[in-house]
Amino acid sequence: MFVLEKRKYNWLDMWLMPFHCAPVSTVAVTVQKLLTALANVFQVIVVAEFLDGAIQAVVRGNFDSETAVWFVLMLLIVSWKRVSYHVGRLFTNYATIHGNEQIVAEITRKRDRMEYYLLEDPKIEELSNRLTGRLEYNLRQNLQWFLNLFAINIPRIVGVLLIMSGYVWWLSLVILALTVPLFFFSLKSGKKVYRAFEEAAVYERRHKYLFSVLTGRETTEERSLFGYTGQVNGQWHKQYEGAVEQDIRSEILFMGNSLRGITINGALSLVVVLIMIPLAASGRLTAGIFISLVTSMYDLIDIMGNSTAKAVNWVATAQEYMKDLTVFAALPEREDAAGGERTQRREADAAALKMQGKIPELKELEFCHVTFRYPGSDVEILKDFSMKLECGRHYAIVGENGAGKTTLIKLLTGLYREYEGQILYNGIEMRSFPREEWFRIFSCVFQDFARYYLSVEENICLGMGDMDFEEEGPEQKRERISRMENTAKQLDIHDFLRGLKGGYETRLGKLDEDSVDLSGGQWQRVAMARALMNDAPLLLLDEPTAALDPISESRLYEEFGKISRNRTTIFISHRLGSIKLSDHIFLLKDGCVREQGSHEELMRLQGIYANMYETQQSWYTEKNVENAESIDAPSRQAIG
Image (cartoon, rainbow, N blue to C red; front, side):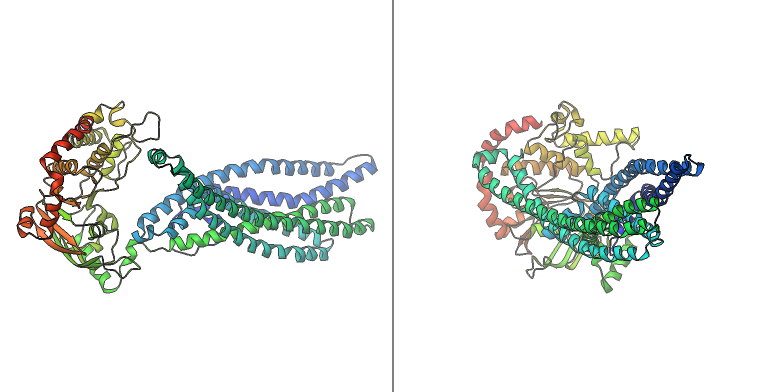
C-alpha cells in the first residue's frame, strides 16, 4: 500500500511507487525484464555456436546433436522475447492501474489535511494538477523506462561488453568512452522536458476552464444573452496555443536527444565493423563469432546511443516529477500547527476530553479575545473578538459585507487554526481536537452549497458521514430511509421527491439523460435536509438562501428554525428580517461584536442594528409580502 510520506522522493521511486501499490505485479514485470536481458546476452553465444556448428556441418556433410541443441536454444530465446512483451505489458498495466488508484487517493487525502490557505493558492493548485495530470500514463512510463534502463539495457550492455572483451578488450572501452557522454546530455535534456511540461500545465488548466465556459450548460443563458463567445474564444485560443507551444518544445528537446543518439549510432556501427573485419579475416574471430558480435554490437550501440539515452532522458524527467512530489508531501498540514508550550496545553486538553469516537454534547462554545489575520497579511480581520454560545439556542450573526462573518465561519469550522486567543468548546481549546473531530462538531449549509449529481437518497444521506449502503443491514436501511423521508417532510419537499420518476433513487443534475435538475429553492431544501441528517451538535447556515428574495428567505429560515428548535443553530446573514426570530443576535462591524441581544433589545438600543433594520424594512412590507407570495406560489407548488 502506497503512503505519501514527508521525505525526499527520487528516481528510485519510479520503481518503488508501483511496488508499494502492486508488489507482486511489479516484481513479476521486473523479473520478466531481467530474463529478457539475460536472453539477449545469452543469444550472442548461442547464435555464434550455432553458426559455427552449422558451417562445420556443411563442410563435413552432416549435423551433430550439439548443433541441434544450439538451434533449439536459439528458437526458445526468440520465442521468449516475443512472449515476454505481452507478459510484461499485462503486469505493467495491473501495477499502473492500482498505482493510479492509490496515489490519487493519497494526494486527495493530503489535500484534505492541508492548511486551508494552501488550497486557495494557485501555485499549489498547479502543483497538484501536475502530480495528478496523466498520472496513470506517467506511472506506466516511469516503470517501463526504469526497468528498460536498469533491468534490460544495463545488464545487456555489461553482458555483451564482457563477451566482447574476451576477444577485443580495447573495443569495449572505446564504445563506453564514446557513449557515456550521451547519458549526461540526456539527463540535462530530461530536466528541460519536464520544465516545458510544467509551463504547459498552467496553459492547459486555463484553456480547459475557458473551454467549459464556451461549451458548458451552466453558462448557456449568459453566453447567449451577453454574446461573449468571441471574446472568450480569443482567450481560449491564446491559452491553447501556449500549451501547444510548450508541448512542441518538449517534443523538440526529446527528438534532439534521439537524433544525437542516432548519429553516434551510425558512426560507432561503422567503426565496429571496420575493426572486426580484419580480425575475422586473420582467424582471430570465427565466422559465427564475427556475425554474432557484429549483429549484437549494432544492437548494443543502438541501445546505448538511442534506447538508453531515451531511458536516461525519461529518468531525468521523472526526477523532476519526484521533486514536485517531495514539495507537495512536505506542505504543512493542520496537525503541524501546534508547537511549544501551547502544544503541551492542547495535548492535556485532548487527554481530558476523552472523546472515544463521539463528540460530547454542546454546553457552551466561546470565542475569547480572538484576533486573526490571514497568512501573509498584516490586516486584522477579527480584533479581540469575543462571543459566547449556549446549548439549544438559536443565534444569528449579522453585519455588512467585510464585517468578518466569513472569517468567523472559517475559524469556527477549523479551516484556519492559527489565531490569537482561544475558541473553547465546553471549556476546551478546539485546536486540541483532532481535525476529524473538529469537523464533526458542525453541520453546515454554505452560500455556495454543493449540488451532487448523485441520487436524491445519496444527496441527503451524505450528511450522515461515512455511509456504505451496501454494507448496512436491513434494519439500518429502514431506519435511515425513515429518517430521510421524515427530514424531507419537515422541509416540505417529500411529496415532490417521491413523485419523481425514480423517487428517492432519481439521479439529480445534468450528467445523464434520465437525470433531473432541480430549481434553486429545491436544491436549497435538499442541502438543508443533508445538514439535518447530521447529528453534529451545532447547525450552521451561512447565507445559503442569498439567491432568494427576502420574503422567501425569511420564510425558509423560519421553517428551518422550527425544525431545529431542539438544536443549537447559527444563522449568518446580512438580511436582518430573516433572523429576527433568533434568540440572540451578534452584530459584527470591523471585526468586533459591536452590538448583541434579541431583536427587540437591539431595536430599543437604536444603534447600528436598528438603523440597518429600518433601512431594510421596506423589503418586508405587506405589499412586498403579497407580491412575493404571488411570485413564490408556483415554486412552492413544485416543492410541495
